[in-house]
Length: 349
Image 1 (tube, helix red, strand yellow):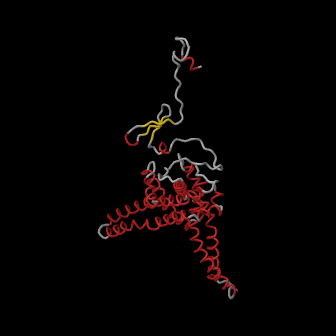
Image 2 (cartoon, helix red, strand yellow):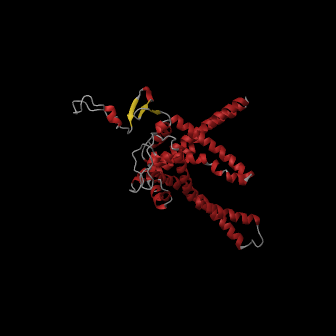
Image 3 (cartoon, rainbow, N blue to C red):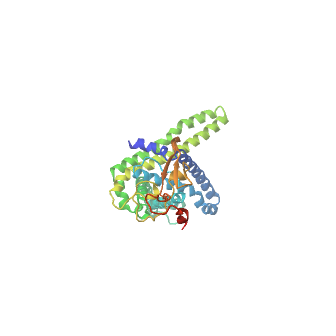
């Protein structure tokens, strides 16, 4: 049941086509930008360091959007949110990246320990023999096994931390081990996490037939190979983003029961617009905005009376959203005003 719902999520957005298109473009540009960044750092380290924030800006937006998808899973909503409030997406993506960096610190320590010992062994400075060599070997062993073990722990805890971030909007809550571990110990979270890992691991194999066809086409015609390669790349990027959406929703849905058992946790309203939510007290109030469907262009705000005109399905519907009706003058039956009373002058006054 959770698998079928997770797979449907990317196609149940208010504007599913636009959402998938924007997400796929951002994902593809992120991959290209990251590859270019690594090449730039290798050639010009100073310039590469200077443009780092710009290069990873797209990645932060995607990360922020996936946090919203996690919030949709927590609230058991199978319709994915739209790409609206980009400033909020960027801010949430930055928070998500910070949480990931905090939980990656033990892995960085293991890498530093094993890397430092390996470097000392390779350089072999004067006096580096006997006990120092033994200590270096032990350090490499501890660092290597520690990195392997903690890597698995990180893969399991990081989605739980992201779910806490989606539910509270609080960095402090997301990096609090007690909350994150309590979520990760839930059976439902384990089920959601296994489903997410399965989608991210097995899903990309679906493009293997396209890769094979593109390679075989290249044996006959270079143009066909180019077209096949471009088609494969397009399908891969769209599939990758949709799988990330499904995996994020699955981990959020799995963490929902554990999060709801904590009275101090509620889904952030900004993360999931128009959802019946409980706003955490640490999140400041924001001014009301037009519905997401209006922001993505699927609906139009009429110029008269603040009415939203729904155009989906070919039938127009009107919904009032808080604009008061103009007052009508009382009739003679309900008011004793004289017949020659000028209502226009009274309204202006």
